[in-house]
Image: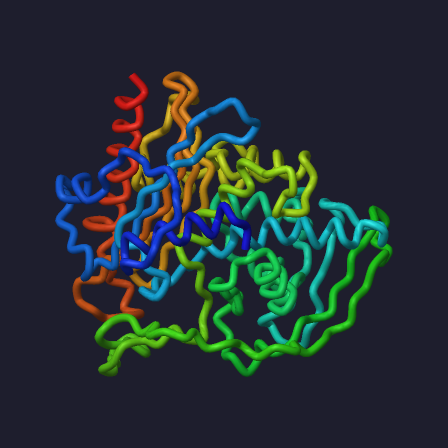
Length: 398
């Protein structure tokens, strides 16, 4: 892994696990004090709180200096990442596209996934140009409203072997992305479906056959059990925690670094995408649904401005009028976990910082009952946290 990132990881482990840290500039932000002042009652252990903040400081070099602070950061304290795994998948989809550009496909080429199982079969609806199944449309929908169908399509397009081998090669050794959100049993997840890409005349220009995965889903090496009991249907609950050992995982430090490497690419860019592709990702990552001009996202109240902007805004449904603050982020919301990994930039006060935070909101301890405490714990705490850190950075700049 890159020297810079090794230093970051060592520093974070010092705060949590008392390991030896390397020299890394420390932010002035006191997260312990900020959490202690929270108007939302938070127990760091019970609510599984993990926070990581990076303050961006401009210097004479092309790349800014980022100073970090963290609280509760522990790669072996499992939290379910939910849609946060969409961040590496959208980037890797563009890497995959660049690797196959000689086959006559582009970001807006229609494609289909072919399988006897409904778990892997996806075709374009083609009612409007926004409904065409293309890499471009999938990425837009994933970044705008965290669309799961689009994620499932890109996951099956790439395949779990490709996704995880790429991430490991880039140094993300703790992350594993092994499942889509199709809700299918593991027995149906051991192959990658066939795919076709089409040209403008609906002629096939690129085809890949279905293949079986080479690598089985790995078991996490630490305790990944969550909750006290599991609801298995509308009336039946069984005692015992849910085991996420064979599920997706994106530790907070690696998730944040993925975003840092996208926002501020080094000369030896980690992500093998073009400058135009990078700007495409950043643009759609920071848009509000109303700015998309996609009818399904602008015609009703379901997709309000702060639909996926937990930090700073929580889940406020009132319109966001100011354009001086932009949030480039990815969120996850499932099984009681609310997570946001974000780069926040304010043009008026010239403030920019990274923040990644997760919290667990499930007071009754039951998994799958859909009675999570997002509205009283997760959302208001992330809103407070984002606003408080933003305000402190503004004060420090004066």
